[in-house]
Length: 576
Image (cartoon, helix red, strand yellow):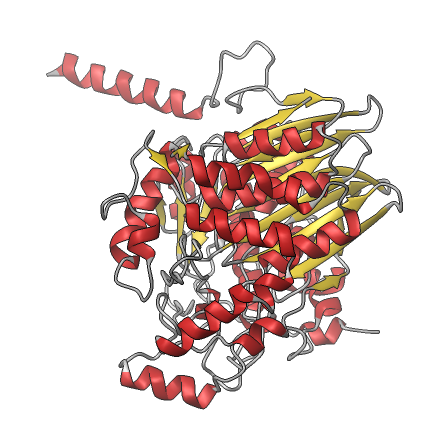
């Protein structure tokens, strides 16, 4: 018995040591938290969540295309090959570094709610469905798809090749087929049972004999090929004012939908000024609301007041601090982030260093079980991810989504894409900044990011995945700036995610009782977990849901790009 007990103790100590060790302890380079080296190239770089999309973007660069051309081409490919995350039925946001003008540009290409559906009508409809929140599937959460207009806005300003050349590789793959990758097959299989019953042709378009395609199976989408061919030939107006818009309008009227020809024809994207805070000498840029990007900036303002590097990466102290900062910021996110055409969000106050100091005072050694939003107006004064870079020094940070994977499940027969369900993220509370209104953009989770150093581009990056995104952005940034990791290592390193904050919708977890729960990947030492539990945190292990990261860093001294891709997904970074 004694021998067995000794063996158990030895096994426990070995297991614990192994879990304290880094992800790759035997790497001779010493970059021990990474699965592989960064990709390094001089002339161009593309990083996406699908290797074939990455290769398409790279081919566009080699043909003389700009970073924007490559981004459009790769995004179109992802809409075909990864319909579990994006497509032309969804929205798009982008940050572009234009090397010629030495400026950052932000694009909000998100769509708005139907103009012929009022809040009163919506509530009446929900009451008949015996719901007190907007459903995730079907007609009610559908808003105008902004992606196609976003492509053309980007192309008009920064494109070099024709849209026909940019879209042709995806048209060819849609007609001839492509093999489905592992993770995409997994999510596709989860979506089919939920979405097949929705109005339209989801089952015909997105299944093989009623089932999701399996890993390695060849999938075609000739209807999407036809839609993209029309767009390539006739431009964005075919989608918003022409035959495609008319087909959408007729389908919606016939099937009880609310999206109309008027909604499509009046849609516009918005060029916006990216917002920034300085974090230890680096300028971190995100887009303003209706997205959640500034949550990352608010968290960084709080964390900057502490010496994270001295605390140590994934230490009890640094994890506690970051989790508590997240809790503070997400209460502001729930209250103040909304379409700024309808609500004057106190942005300057939210991003004020003074405000962050006031909020940081609320952090104690114990986990907070209740936090309320602050009063930023006191400091007012005067939001798939891919990234590309070209030989001329231009860089693109682009994110695009259907929401909830494959979106609403509604597919207009013959068009080959699913409509997004982003409208689910409205509130029904008439006093809320994010309350539903006709022609309004809903709260958005998808956020591209960009980092500048000494007024020069340093890094284009993003980390997709709902409310994980601001938390993930902060983890990547601190991994690089505070803990000295390279950009691949920063993405491979162990992640965490806090759940349980108040949301900017009605279907929310009220953060008033237990402080939520922290999900962590499995290689954090038990001593650290025990310390967090002693502080009052509820901890759970979770094998997925930590987002999808891509990044490109520019080395101005050597004039080379470094690329990194998410090791938890199917993707690839590649350059030439």
